[in-house]
Image 1 (cartoon, one colour):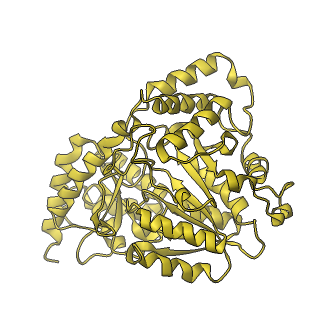
Image 2: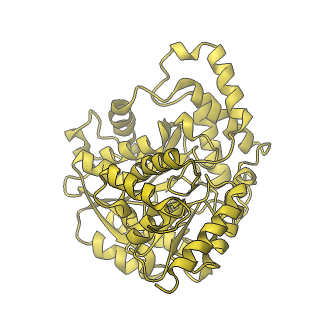
Length: 439
């Protein structure tokens, strides 16, 4: 029996009882369940890096605004599908103040988190042209978006951007787009799981090719303004959140409240559609919707079919936080910088103990420290590393389930790791390195 920080026999038994065919390729939620069971059986707390959930308290601005809305009786009323006016106004202001893009309030649509936003987007963007029925993911990316397409019976293609940064991206993208079946390009920026951030050069390439091939770009901004190398906290002042919207009108954005505003539990995000795309008519949409106008089909076809509106009081909560951010009285970026500071410390603990950072550069610049980072250990595949770390009280997810070709790697999330756990993390990593460096 091996001598590991977490009793070897208990971990092995719980893995067996999980009935997972391959724990190294388990989904995020499957790993959460497994680690919960090991913790319950051993009484030992893990350094948990498998799930990307906020680890900071939400602002009182949102909470108090929700309470006031509930006291006004909104709980008994269905919200309008297109959102409460206060929220739509502040979203449009927010996009102008922090992305420097003008958008009409009409195109600012609340969604039940970016998850619902993506589902609705797929229902429309993949049906605008009968000849274009495939979504192209610039990976690595959020695995559930591919699961959504699978559930919808829709097609997707994917490639790992690791070897195609900068100008190399153009030829790689064009090799897919010239086939004529791609309706939509989707990426996250900053990226989940690698934390790469696309440069303006790369965003310009995506925008130019979107124009050339008439492709709609879905920009997933789940980690809005969290590239902490830039101070994006001052409304109306550069630098702004980088965006493909500077180079094409064929875009929609998914802006999440979960991470930047620590509001994940309230399940609210916003879909923002460019003014030109909202009004554009696609005759092929009439196959599924009552209107050929993109925005109308999105709102009263896709979004309406998925939910009878976003939680009424939560809309007022997000509106209050956005209003304060727009007026410069709520520095939401400063609040979440803790993630970047923890990442810097944690990455050093890993690299000091034999690990390597997998995605480490944005073109020729060092990667930012943020919500996620990626790790590998010499001689082990990502699947082997994930399972082996469980015996040392450390959990993460395999990059293999994110569309990454870096099968040696894992994604680590910093949010649930408390600073008080750093000594435990350091000790467990030292033990791991001692046990594996010569094997």
